[in-house]
Image 1: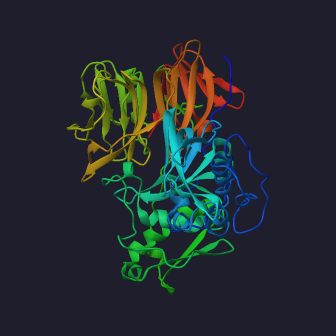
Image 2: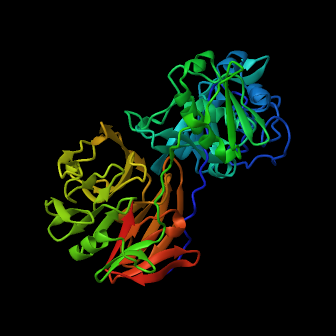
Amino acid sequence: MTERGRITRAIIVAVVLTVALAGCVGIPSSGGVNEGPAVKSGGDSAFVTDPVGPPRNASKTELVNDFLQAATSADNNYAIAKEYLTAKAAQSWVPTNSVLVREKPATPEDVGDNTVDYAVSTNSSVDALGVYSQQASDSTQTLSYTFTRVAGQWRISDLPNGIVLSRTSFENFFNPYPIYFFDPDYRYLVPDVRWFPTGPTVQDRIVIALLAGPSDWLQQGVVASAFPPGVLRGSPVVIHNSTATVDFSANAASTKPTVRGQMKLQLQQSLLALNITSVSMTARGAPLAIASADDSDAQIAVPANGSALIQRGKQFGFYPGLESLGGISTEVAQLNGTAATLDRGDSTAAVLAKGGVYLVTSTAAKPVDTRPDLIAPSIDTFGYVWSVPSSDPSAIRAYGPDGVAHPISSNLPTGSTIVSLDVSHDGTRVLMYLETSAGPLLVVAGIVRRGGVPASLGDPLDLPVSSDDPIDATWVNSTTVAALASGDSQDTVISYMIGGTSGDVSTTEDAVRLVGGIDSDSLRLITDNGEVQQLRASGWQNIAVASMLATQQ
C-alpha cells in the first residue's frame, strides 16, 4: 500500500461577494504570464498590490495585462483599475460581480475592431454571493475588452464584470466560510459554504449572505432561515473584542422574541470563524432584546460516537471493547449483514443482509425492502430507512418506522447505476455516488420533506469526482465528503468540500467500503479480507479485523 497524501481536515468559513460592497479586499494575481508585484500590508484591504495607472502610448494588449493586474487591488473602490476605463465604463463596471479562477497562464490577443480577447482556462468561479462552482474539467472562457481613444490614449470602453485570479492567488487569499441555516424543524444548523477574501468587511458580507438566503440547491424547503423576508443589513457590523453588534433595517424590530433567538444563533455560528463569540442585534440602532430562554438550542449535527462500529462474530458494537449496545447489538449481529447504519440514539439500525434491508430495533429485525440488488442503506434523523437497488437510482424509497414505503422522486440520470447513498447527519441532504454513461458522478442533493416525511430530492450539486470506478462515498463532517474509487493499480480516497475545492488523495488496496466518523481523523474503510483501516498521517493503518464495518448516523 502506498501513500500520496492524506485527507485534510476541512476548515470552513463563509464568504460572500456582493455588489453593494464595492470596497472589497484586493487580490494579487497575474495578468498574462506575469506574476505581478509583491504583496504589501496596509491600506484599506487585508492585502494589496502596488498597481500602477496606464502608461502612455501602451498598446491595447499591454493595457489589458496591466488592467487585470490593477484590478487585484480594491483600494478606493478599484480606483487604479478604473483609470484604464472610459468614464462611462468606470461607472458601469462591477468588479465584485464574480471571480473567474484561471488555471493556466493567458495572453491577451488583439483580434481587431479595437477589441482584445483574453482566453481563460478555468474550471471554477465564485459568483456575487460567494457561491463556488467547479466543473470536472477545464474549459475556455473568452473575455472581450473593447477600446476607444481618450485624449489620444487607448482606454477600455466595454468589458465584462468581475475579476480574474490565478489559481495560486485564489487559494492564497480566499477562504471558505460556512453560513448557517436551520433544518425545517429547527433542530440542527446546516452549513452553506461561501468564499470570500479575508479582510475588514468579511463580517458584513457574511450578514448579507445570511439575509440573501441559502444557495439554490438548498432551497425548495430543504433548509430554513429565521430572518424574515425583507430584513436588510443596516449599518456596518461593529466588532469590539469578540462581540459583534449587527444592525438591521427597521422591520427587524417586528420579529418575535423566539425568532430573534434563532436569528442570533445563525449569526453567532456564521461569525464564529472570525473569532466572534457573542452577538448583539439592533434595528436602526435600537437594541433587539433577546431573553435567554428564547435562544435556540439547535446544534451542528455530528455522530455521537467517533469510534469504529464493527461486527466481529456475534458481537456488534464500538471498537475497541465491542461492548454490547443492548438488544440492538444482538439483533444486528444475528443478521450477519454486510452493511449497517446505526441511528444517533443507538436504538435503531438499517441493515443490509440476506433477504434485503432490515429495520432493526432492540427487540426485532423487520424486513422492509426485499427488492434484489440493494445497496447499503442509510437512516435519517426521523428514523426513515433509505434504500435503493443498484440498477435503478430512480427507485429510492424511504421506509418509515411503521415499515411504510415512501417513494422519493428525483431527477437523477436515467440509465445509471448507484453504488452508495448516505443521508447527512442533520437529515437535510443525501450523498450519492453513481456510474453513468458519461462516467462517475458524485452528487449531494437536498431532501424535501412533507410533514417530516421525505418526498423528493432537490436539484443535485455535482462534485468534481475522478474518473476512477466508484466504490463508495461517505460524509466526513457537515461540509466535507469522501469518495472511494478503484484505479488501474490502486484504490484512492479523495475528500471534497461541498461548495468548495477537492482535498488531498490517499491510496490503499482492496477496499470495499468507506465509513465516516466525526471528522477526517475517524475516516475508516474495510478491505475484502476484513481488515479495518483508519487514515493516519502516514497512511491507512490496520486497526481491527471484522466481518462488517458500520456507520453511525
